[in-house]
Length: 381
Image (cartoon, rainbow, N blue to C red; front, side, top):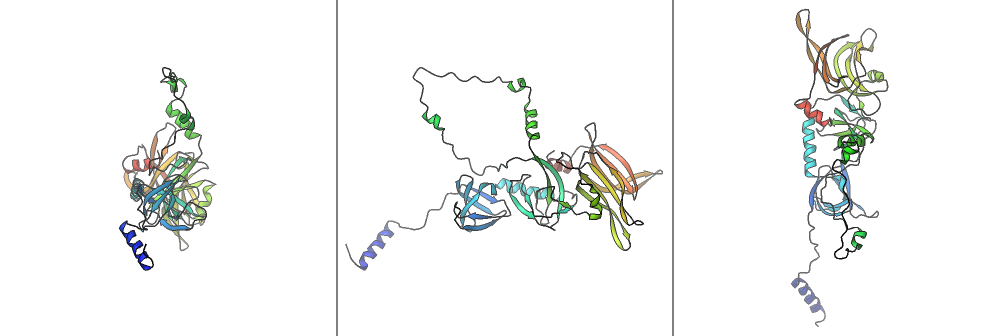
């Protein structure tokens, strides 16, 4: 065996000959996904003492290269690897749905602007556990588009990876085969109409299950950057002046519109139309609407018209209305609301107004068509 420097030269040559290398083989890519939350930090290892890794942003594309329980190991575009909860990732289809939601929201009318007193998460879906890709800060303004009531259930993120194979139960692995020529009879099956015999239909059973669950009212909001997502509706504070909001009587304002303005002592005051709803989560959007007028003589807001005990639905529209008056047709400012009456039929009721005078101009059966049907589906109806 050569000694001295010649020995090290020989060892180096042998390493080259057998392909010695310290580079690790590149992991197999199991799937591609996108980051759901506004920001999330990678874990280098799944231990409490491991230092944190890079911060990933919403929409960033990653490759899934491993899995351990509810965590997946990902590789970023820069090549950094780490662990992240699987529910924080979105599939390509989910990102495309989020893009389509923003496109649809861009065509929807605003039912008023809102802000918050404390940070509020904007979710990809109307579920508390769904990824939150933005956080509304106090003073930040968003457009409120529609409402939706959803049962409070665990969030089920569409599978990015096939579920791992489950091992056979221990009892099944230990079960011995029956002796030759001896087989156990099959278990008796219930009759095909067992659900009817029980007095329950599948639809009735599903409705009872849903009714027994707690619910949340969600609002679809449009952000200033054009993105759209779901927030819990109750923390939203509609940006209507406090001198009007004080008349809400403990009800939540669900929409508001400026329907005219006057000048009083050099100050501009708006007349307002709003809708409100009582406490609780309801399958409709408002139970009353009110039209406020600024009285320039008394320098205060007064109610010019109000309707209560309604089952009202969005969209509320504010537009000019044709009025037949004295044998002539005139154009008045007006608005329309959708209400469900005792017969179960929904009607669009159109009103025209001139300051304190409010007239019901038309009442027609209503069914969602076109864009309204699209918005109606987004509201879960």
